[in-house]
Image (cartoon, rainbow, N blue to C red):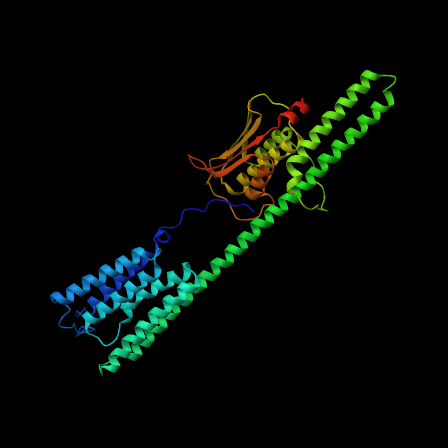
Length: 402
């Protein structure tokens, strides 16, 4: 699975939940105040203002409720239940100032928005407690007014309760959808690692079979001339020793992490010698690949040689498919510290896709980890995307290669 950084979110999606709650509170309060005036086209205000609305006590309650609502929106991500309690208290204060029998729907919209974010982002227990608190306030408000023989807008409160439950259901549905997407992503990542390990097993099978074949041929040749041509027999046995050490080194680094074999078709063994051919084919397809070699080129162990080529091949393929650019650079460095460094950089959009390409970043990271190397994949400092890998070359394997 090819995993890449997400693109920048649209402006509205960057607003935090507390910002939406605060904006909703301000808009609903402004709407409530506007209804106390006779607007154009009306013969009278939509709601006659209470006597205390524009007095010092009404304005004080209005200011306190606004402060509580804004502070509640600020602490919503960290303390969701306390934030909801502040929103409910603010709604009650404003309703008292308005002098109406029931909490208006406009004053409960901010509570519904906060409840949606709590249900969507917090655990299910917290969401259930939050909706219970909101409904309990509505029930308590009506009960107190009925017990005191005051007028209670029961029908209006039932509508408010319905909107509250709908907001909670929507948030809970969003929470379930996110959990399902996370499970799918985890399963896909696990499958990508398993698939890549099986791919490595097939490639390792090819390398081991090749090395054992060389050992058998050299040993047979040495056995035939050991008495007549001792020098030739000695050279053949030296070749057997080098091939055996090289094969054991590769097995020691990679096969420890592989647990089962794959019966699929074996892949053709390739290496860094094919990078120029890969660059020519990609350039012919429309994306120029500039290959730069640094340091003295030398023979590498087959597993490191093959892994380096696979990393370059997949990175270049991702550039062609997803970077929306017409060029990229490949840097291959043979360091003096017995390590091979690889860098693939492009000047494209710096983003990719979640489509499974068969190898992808998960596979590259797994392959480098099996070789005890270092791997990074991130947007470049000046744009685009950059993949880097550092593969250590064991001294014994390098000496055998020479």
